[in-house]
Length: 240
Image 1 (cartoon, rainbow, N blue to C red):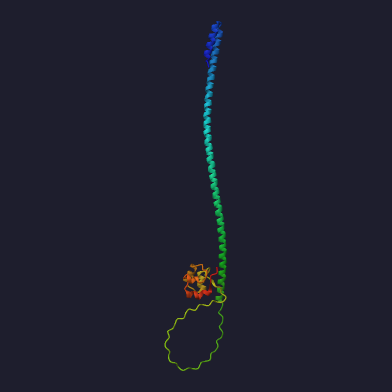
Image 2: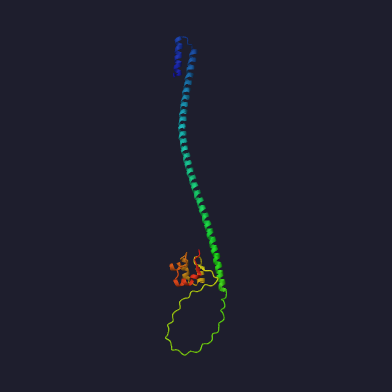
């Protein structure tokens, strides 16, 4: 673009070449040239300002694009983290539900076991009550003795050779009528000492060797000696 001064010089030269340039016209032409120059400079400044603004907008656009990319990456990270936390929460919820079911099952099992223990306790109490009642009852009276006529005196016999006394074999105690047998799988050691007449050590060994399926296991497992077992076998049971 030609400058306003060059245009003014050209106009002035053309007018002088025509030989009809007056002083007023010359000054007017110079003023117009100066005005055109000022306008041209103003336009150049506006153009420069527009170019700077375009450059600034482009930089802002680049920065916004970078910020948008960072925001997208952060959003994706948050979504992944939320998904992971949601999955962990679901897993913990399932674990808690399973633990709740397990605890409920254990509670039911404990309640059933408690009911069974109460039932056995009631049965033992009833057995003890029967034993105590039987022990308090007086023994049956013996029939009156029948008089025996005296025997005639016999001739004195020759003295016999001394006989060494032989210890009598232990006689098993007969079970009392009306008494229930003692269950060696459920009775306490104290009850077995009281109602079977065995020692505390033997009762503890019976308790330690539970359970028993048949009575003879008391001998097989070396819990009781055979004579002791034979003495009480009719007063014990192994009912489950």
